[in-house]
Image 1 (cartoon, rainbow, N blue to C red):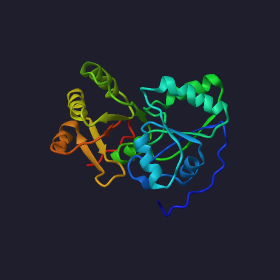
Image 2: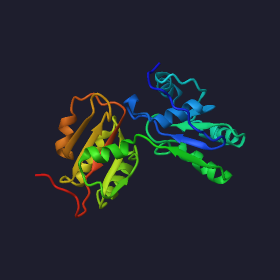
Image 3: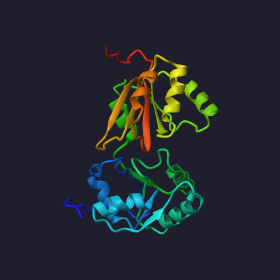
Length: 242
């Protein structure tokens, strides 16, 4: 249990609530998010075990139902049916804002087709956090999602991004980050990059430099989960630190 008092919120039935959850530190949940999760009749979660840890931390007891990429064709109609039945529905991802690089967008498309309303409960974002931690110009930035897994496709993807003017933010697996950095270094050896990992956690770290300078700094590190790779922009407002 927790000493945090979960507030009572007005959660309209039949309105889909996309709730942002912590990206690492469980204390980063908002009071409004806790109130909505407590009031919901059902919470659809990317990984019920992961979300269950959060719910247990704050003493919330609400039915959890799996909703992920592998079952979205079956679960999206169920969510739509729940909303049409005027149930109180919340949708969460493993971390951060639902619909950003997770199956939530499939639900949004269904809500559009069915003319059903939805809202968001804002909160933590690894993308915005990485933009600030990288130290590159935040005036304009491009979020590019995950690079393709296949090397040929990934190289073409990166070739396009290194030509972009604004700061570029992408997500990458701990298993492919070194390969991706090597490709960035081959395409633009002078481009400044930042690798941001363990955001909001005990071992949060931001490695900055060119791809060639950052690569050896990562040697021997125990990389886990998802990392954020940021490429410095090429615009006139891009700051330079001597």
